[in-house]
Image (cartoon, rainbow, N blue to C red; front, top):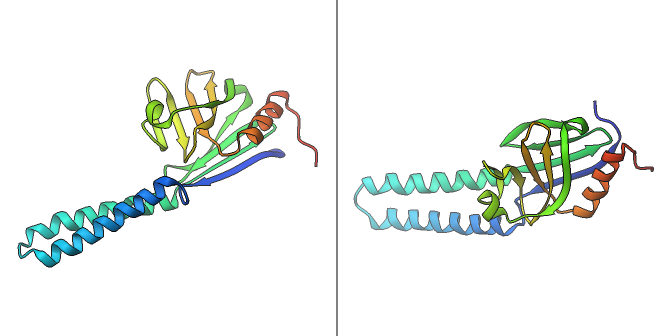
Length: 168
């Protein structure tokens, strides 16, 4: 059971530059498929076009449903990133060796946005921006959780460290 909530943030890809890029690619893919179907007499051409449209629309649906949810109470950090991480994960204060807010380069360090993993950098869950909560766990694992509210998250991890609950 969660204790008193001291931080909560929900992020989606909707409204980010990536979402506009995906919409543009989807439009181009569907337009190309329709144009290709109109211009082609060969039924084999249809298969590639249909696959391209299905994959592009699938990625669009995936990004439209992806939601990074982060909560912090006086005892732990909780995160969930459906459809990538469907069950809520809990990282207790006792599991954490280090935690701090930092700037990062999503593409260079993790290969982009979303649910990412790199051997050197560890796991990243991010939607947009370049600021996140870096966790180094006692078992050696690293997790970076992106945030659009770094000042509030900094205050929350300070309270988590001190095990104080915010008044009001």
